[in-house]
Amino acid sequence: MTTATNGTDGSSTTGFTLHETAALVGAYRWFEGRCFEDLGRWASSDVGPSTVRVLLEQQARHHGEHVGWLEQVAPRTHDCDPDELVRPGHEHVLTFVDAVAAAEAPGDRLVGATRGFHALATRTYRVHLERSGWASDGPLRRVLRHLLADAAADTEAAEAVLRTLPADLAGAPVRGGALGPLAEAAGSLAGPELVERSSP
Image (cartoon, rainbow, N blue to C red; front, top):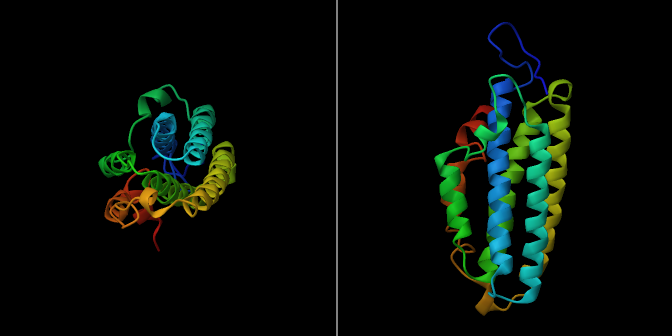
């Protein structure tokens, strides 16, 4: 995949250089991989009703598929090994993901997956789509649109299950907004700079 450039500095006329795109995709692959691992771990536990575990297992598979799709569109150049870029996009992102992954109550896990993982991913992928162009990033844009559609569908399904949980299973820390400041600090899957650069 190539990126349209403007001059010899490699700056992108549509928002991202090739190396910026490679770093972003690496951060997205890391995040989707963590979602696959964390939701899969929750699904395999004996905590909560089977409806929650089945839903988490289904959504974990979605994240596993996302990793594969992103791997296919990761930029590859002579000086850019995409596998070496699979890492957290920012230290605040790692802190946020670790906090969500620590949830124990079934309700907290569902909220963490939807209003935590899915919400941050949705914000990030939308910003990326706003800043990239079809001419340079068409394959990646198609993948991101699929990821956004999955996030929306998974969030709707999780919220429906969440409404059926009794109070003793709903949990409290996540629903009380404990993750809000962490999500705000992260800003996006690539850290706060991606969102800040996209602000008017």
